[in-house]
Length: 328
Image 1 (cartoon, helix red, strand yellow):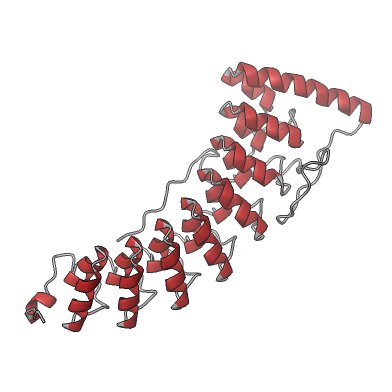
Image 2 (cartoon, helix red, strand yellow):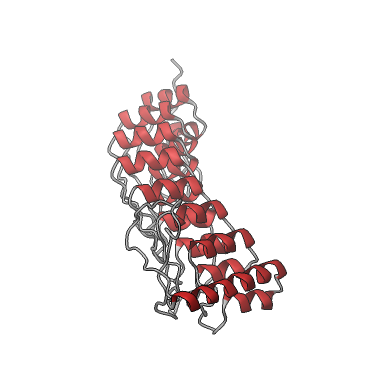
């Protein structure tokens, strides 16, 4: 057997990267075994707090992870930003690795410094199988980040309709609001994610004025997303609803010079006015507090809540959220 000098086993660069960490990061199983047999420390950490197990999880190297865990590597050892091996396994969509870590007791409720959970990371990156594993392990579907963004919210922003569908059917709150007052529906409408809007509308989201002083229809109109404008109007959004600045979606479409959107809204606004005159009732139906699937094939099945609080001292209403980088 090759014998390595003891000082080689302790050799570390300025960032305290050990040979074992390098071997694990490359998925070199034989090297990992050899180094451990010769006394390498499976708990050694870089200056960022990451261990050999962290890098094995990041690369999806299940065999290496099993060896390290058997050698005593802590399953929940976190980096300086709070990221554990489970986080990077979720980020990379490594289902087998996630399953392995969970079977060794990885904390499904762990949080990064911004309070993002493994479920949040899986939702953000669109990994449905990982998401299901985490939910089955007891992950909370509504656990928010510091800014109030939930897994559903981030999935809606990223356009992951398959993730949105899973979360909603697992009880995620359809009207969870980020600190800027935007709901998942508002953000999906703003980003132009028609398939996400379709899934959200099945669970009766708030179609009225939000805490940011806008409706989802205003968001769709602002960026000229005609297909989503049609979806929202068909669902019951009020074409005459005024935002915090006093503008209706119709007026906003004219300001932004979206001719097709303007023409469509003008026709629908006239129809709504005529219907109001006939029925004497121009109200839009009430919203729901929890995710409750409905039959979208029945006429008027999807309705929303009109009115609401306006103006909160948070970021602009169309602020987007960048993807999470986990320190390695």
